[in-house]
Image 1 (spheres, rainbow, N blue to C red):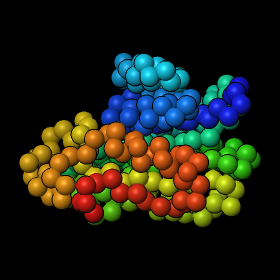
Image 2 (image 1 turned 180 degrees about the vertical axis):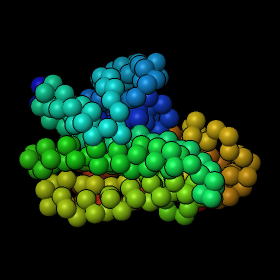
Image 3 (image 1 turned 90 degrees about the vertical axis):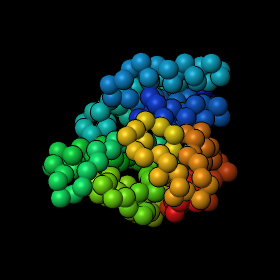
Image 4 (image 1 turned 135 degrees about the vertical axis):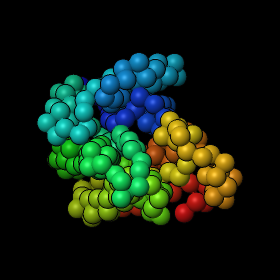
Length: 244
């Protein structure tokens, strides 16, 4: 069970990239972080090592965010072990690029399931207990692609745009229970998600003329999860170097 004033967080897709940086940042604020991952246990274990090296606390929690029942059971595990879940960061995501005219249905469905349907699967059981406790922080990692669109990423842009709408709608549903629902919208960040892209062309489109760092996104997420952000609700915070 939680100790007095101990906060518990679940970060999905926390094995690498932005998710890892978010988990480490939250742990640095004294939050106990559950590190979700699907298949790469070694990367998730590295996230936990990074947390513990900074005297933080966390635990590994593998489950498939695209499966509703698996997500529900994972949240139940947290509640059984800790008694509460104060922070949810929806970060899990993939890309499977291609022009829509030639895109296979599997490429569409996999991206929508992992990036958008996972919001429903994980957030529903979390928000139900937050409503009972009359408090909570939900932050979702969307993307500048969901605001401006990217050629070759109709599936990804659609999913990320959907997260923006879901964030704003849920914020209106639960805002009177001391629950805030916000999103951060990264631009081009130095992660594996950029593999295969033309970096020179991309950087030329960014006013800051550089890629962002995962830690820069994590700082924004950590702020939105803090008590200092109690009156910020239903907002989309861009971390994109001026791209959008």
